[in-house]
Length: 266
Image (cartoon, rainbow, N blue to C red; front, side, top):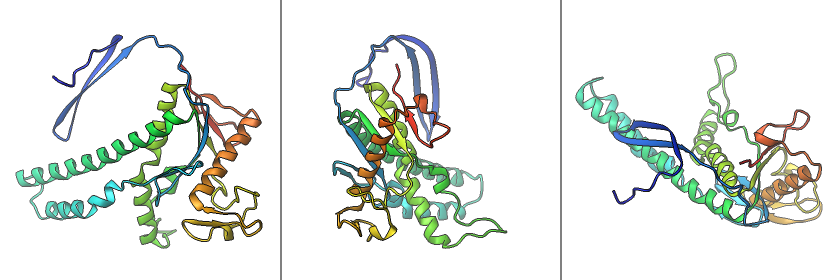
């Protein structure tokens, strides 16, 4: 097989699995590796978003791939066709497999793009500062409950889909293990007011955010792209944490401060 490669180390576990009609084998091995040292000494802030997947404090912007949004109409059409078929019939089973393959394709497109983005960021920066976003809370059901019905349900549902379509949690997971491989670190800081605070003078007000993309400080007049300004605030928060020596290993946050350090350990 042309893509075969030598399995290094002692084989500890082999798992065979099937997904969407395809077979996969996962081999877990154990071997000794030297402690990695990251080739870069730079530190960068990363602001995750919906309009832009990720914006760095140095001005680098990664556009979103929106794999679900691009396939949403096709998925809806396949699901309508499924609803017209007799449940558990052969045609129903075939249609269901088509939907599963499309879901798998959407996930693969998203995952592949995130790998390209996280690899580019991880290669160039030893320390990556991100917001400690609680994605599960941010993407809760917009409908609410019977006693507490949701408001602006359609808009909130659209935002939820956009958040999940970006794959913020997966991006953070990939950054963490790639920094581990390279000897770098990922530092998560509280997200409060990073979009409203001026990265130049520190003035914080919601009026500073003129639009989705424009930021202008009402005190000092500092003007910048809103996402870049947010990324610079995230970077500044990371510097503040490091200056105080509040480093938390293994991803466990300090009790007195809602900040965590994902420490690269061998």
